[in-house]
Each structure stands twice: as structure tokens, then as C-alpha cells.
Image (tube, rainbow, N blue to C red; front, side, top):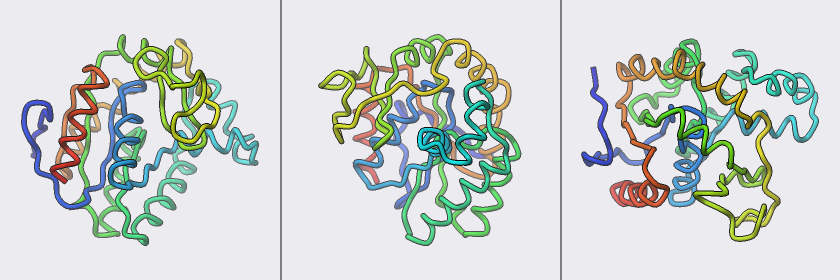
Length: 234
């Protein structure tokens, strides 16, 4: 069994262009990590939540079906999610582009799906799990003030990472919005699901992939400084 490594304490030597799976509760900083790696190394961020929210925003046929599910704080059917993820991952493989999975897997079936798909595409050895450690209380506080750009998917926060211009994205000048479902009732529901169902996947995943554990309760500045060091080692 591979052992988790606390990145803020122990350096980690990464293989060239690793692919990342991010596992952490809502509000833990997965989006910040993804945005940083996209900017620094051209990673492809694959976030089923963002893809789903785009369908809802554009009022597509799929969006109409899944909107009430998302508004209730539930997750959409595995079969739909798996098809979305497979298409995105296969596209990255065909382009020889490294990717970051943000918000997936969310259950044992999703992890099994990834293990099988990675084996089929012969990329299992490139995969790293990034496990974000943080309390539910800090996640709640962050989500209350979180804003997102649905054009370039950068994440901002009124308290810890405010945009230079109120409700305008620093990167593409598109208007910022609050995510559908970013309220306390739904967040508590998703945090409970994460602790019960998603977080235990880390123990299963470490039988297949190296696991990197990050203390994401640290300040945004501390996290970004570490990400810079990580990028230099790549």
C-alpha cells in the first residue's frame, strides 16, 4: 500500500506531466489548485460540476433534466456522469494533454470506472491523487462568500480572494456568479455525503495510485506558494 505524503512537510518528486485526481470536500480549494495548474502548465481541468452547470445555464435538453436534481443538492445519475468523464479523458489522451479531475469520483463505482479506463488507456502510472484535508467549518465559511466565473471557471472569494473589480473576473472580464446550490443547507448535505462516501475512497485509491495529502486549511498565499514550488519540481 502506498503511503500518503503531507506536501507541506515532505517534498514530492513528480513524474513528468502527471495526471491529478482531486479529492476533497466542497470549498476545500480544489478549484484554486486546478486554476493554478492550468495557468502554469496548461493542464486540462475536467470538472463534471462545471460541465453540468454549463448545460443548466445554456438551458440544453440535458440541463433541463438535471437542473431540479442540482437545485435539490443531489448528484446526477452515474451513467450520465461516466459518459461525460469518459469523453473528456479520452479527448485529453488523444491530444497527449495532462488533466486534472476536479470533483470526481464521488463513489466506489466512479473510482472503479476510472481504474478500468486508465488501464485501458495505459496511463495508470501517471495518475496522482491529491487529498485535501480541511474542516467542515472552514469549508462552510468559504462557500458562503464564493464566486465563480462560468466563462473561464476561475474561483474567487469575497474575503480571501476578491476580484479587483466587484463581481468581474480578473482573467477574462466576464461577470462572476454564485454557484447554484451554494447555500448552507445544500453544503451541509454535500459535506455529510463527502465524509461518508467520497473521503473513504482515498484509502481504496492508494492501492492503485500515489496519494498526496495537502493541508488546505492554510491561507491562500501559503497554498499558492507551495503550488509554485510544486510546479518548479515538475
